[in-house]
Image 1: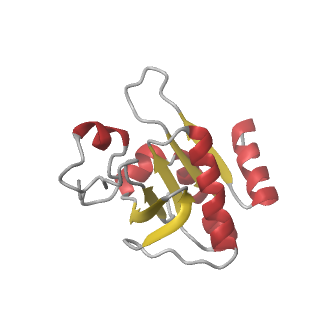
Image 2: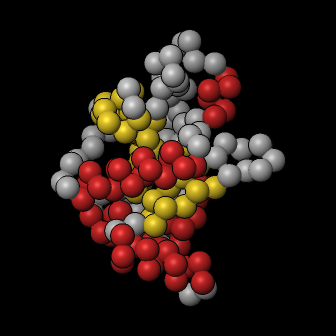
Image 3: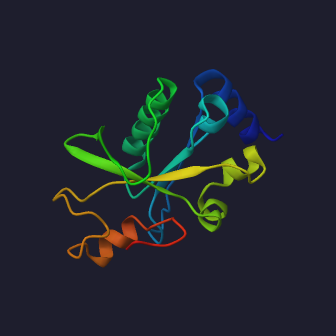
Length: 151
């Protein structure tokens, strides 16, 4: 293992997961943050958040981990409060192709065999990405990572 991989394993053992944040300083791709180790530690899917600032997204990933550690089960398509102040979120399954593109640490850690969900959030006006009012800028910031895009 290289140093980065050793750090991932150590964080999973110590905290239950490792959080990875990726920021494209050229602004060509949206930033994203994801977990590695939640499936191994708590038998729940890994989570990815695309389009939120990395610090906020890291906090949301850790909140997700704490909630699954405490026994909460998240159903795809259901809505959940208390992740983002004043807004519900929902979850969609991440496709195999998107896992290979975005979740590289998970691919390494699980040898490509893992479940992952994308946490979906609305705009500050309450518009969801699949709503007709959602514009292309919002779709670029928060692309759909599921097999069949719903926006």
